[in-house]
Image (cartoon, rainbow, N blue to C red):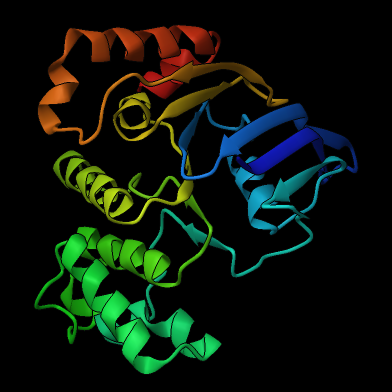
Length: 258
């Protein structure tokens, strides 16, 4: 069943000169329930604009976005967003950060504490529940973000370049953490990324966008079974698919590859 439906969406902004800038043009996209879809494209193609529309942070100039069976008119607890930058509260412990959402919603303490412990274990933060963010590395803080998102029990996870600021080794470890947490409790997930290899490694389907105004130019199904191991990256078919997607991007592909 379709969980996210983007229908004929165009998004315009006004420039400082008062001119209209078209960020997205007539975009259609379906994301099925429990599917992980990665959206790739060059900088400025409208990937983050699309994310903001799905999250409800902005509204379409034309068309509509539907999550579940409801037209999106603003943010809601059915959607959780993980951004590239740290979003942890520095004055709360890891446990306090991860349980913040359900505590604010009035979820019974026993229930949210059990979920928090479960997902802290899945992302490899056993033993750090009482630590503060300043005591953690960047990768560990990102693990807190993932555990917090899943503990909050949204229907849809929206990931905006979540690992883009991390070094290569930490990024690959975080991709494995994402796969582990998706396997533990599948969610409908949409990942915005510049990294085609990351998209192929974690997603069920990759959506390629054109330079601005952003349009969807191709959708590629990822054929690899789960669980996915690090050695998959060296598989010739994996690299062939990566190059196929790079080729589909056309103009701007060099920037994405870099």
